[in-house]
Length: 193
Image (cartoon, rainbow, N blue to C red; front, side):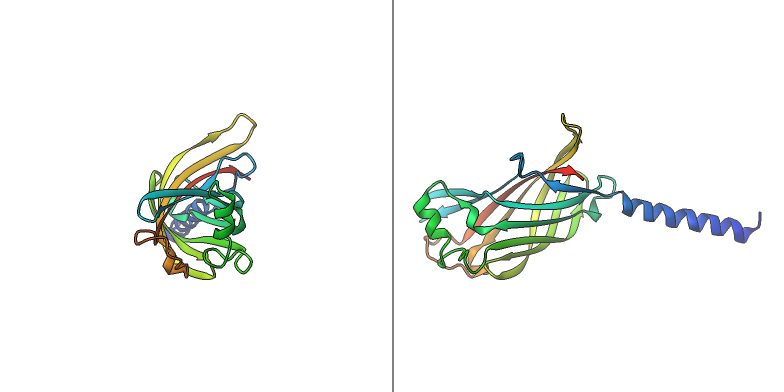
């Protein structure tokens, strides 16, 4: 076997290995129907207490490969009218122009652009579009686990946290001096497609 042929085989093997790594990432659908995912928020109310709530209608998908976590991607769409703070009158106000303006902006989206970290956790960067404004954000992510489920599927789960400023997204309604910052807690479980 000639040196040229040996080099060709080594190069081809290297290329196939690299391509194979990129192709290993599995696609997952976020498990909304089973209520195994949540988008929750916390915000200081008037500087005296904490208001909590969630969005009940959202969905999306992600790709995940524990051996190649930097290739992970996620896309999420939230129906803003599904905001739920456990108080009907407040939720009605939160849907109006002072806050989410759901008639004009019925969806919020997050599309990841980069992941820095390892298989246990890291920083997920992406673009959040909320209230008609698109901004880069970084979510602190933690891998919870993955494996077979009792129904013949395969699942992977993560949790994340990010602090946002409402004013960065054009929501300036006064709830007190400490109320501009909002914490988002994300709990994502996906079923492999």
